[in-house]
Image (cartoon, rainbow, N blue to C red; front, side, top):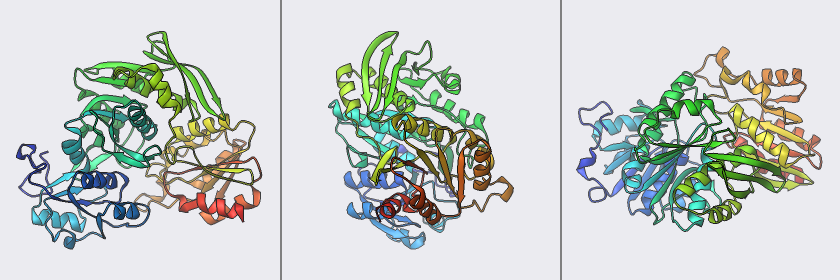
Length: 486
């Protein structure tokens, strides 16, 4: 904690013991982000006076924060700090030139990044269970938190998606464990290291390591360096649960200072996935530990990737002393996560599914899972490239081979990255053309209205429409269901 905003005064020193005696009012800059909103809720529940500011104040986050009694100021500026809060939490959406950040520097108020705040106040006294990896973090974190709860261990958690069993993406429990989704994205403008380095991992899951976040990582080697730093901070008595099906994961965890429990379908994995069956009712599989059958399991979530996520959680729960029967009960009762293969509704035999998939690997695995779960039905993928990586050419060729399980692909034009040269941007038209040459029916659309109009005219009973985007996609799910009803 020796960075600063450009002043001589450094960040707060933990030795000052500023929690909880010396801090009452905490202000969050960028409060409407998913993680920051969750942190605001946890601080409010912990008894602090909480305010926030953001440039984009609108539902559902604005309603969520208002329901918690948290005042949110629209826009950034010096006036938001006029009350001189005791502590300011700076979200990673805030840039060095943000007017409120400049005012923070001028006032000399104490400040922390979001990961530092989470670490120093909520994780320090808990057993931290960190779920990291390019794919599956939210689902695996949600599964782990829910199953710990079902086992009576009363965990706390903060996760990037809405956990159906709690109706929330955060919870403060009385138990010893805190489940946190370990994001490799950067911490703040004054701390460009990955967030997960702040999360004090006692046990960590690494699901996968691929190139992503092209706005902050130059290449796969840069991503691997970040994960190596995570592995290096594991305590000697800690444990890494790593998907050894992934050769990059195997490479990164090879020099871990703690025990590594490998999981997957590979020979030699400590925890092995076998007897995989994907049906409309979900996924069935068996898990073996050290070559011996541990148990048979069922999950409502379809797909091999979800079975592997479940296997990682089984390994953690076994290490924490939860028995096979309790684990099977918790996994079987897991209600899922919002925006992960979530059925939003069925009208006239047409099923509309919402999924967060955007990275090429996630798109491929999601469509493969849905094709198995809805075998015999026409699968239509509706894709919106929206992330900083998917709107760059870096994945232009990779996307061409990941839609094979869909019978038709509809691609909506992206919002262009204006700070990226035109020849470095992703082309939705080119993807449609490349898929067509591959023999897949693919169509380009300039906007969401055109996508909805096409689907209303051409969707037929039995179709499964898989909407793939990490954003709201102009509320396409609700609008499409309403249009199909009409």
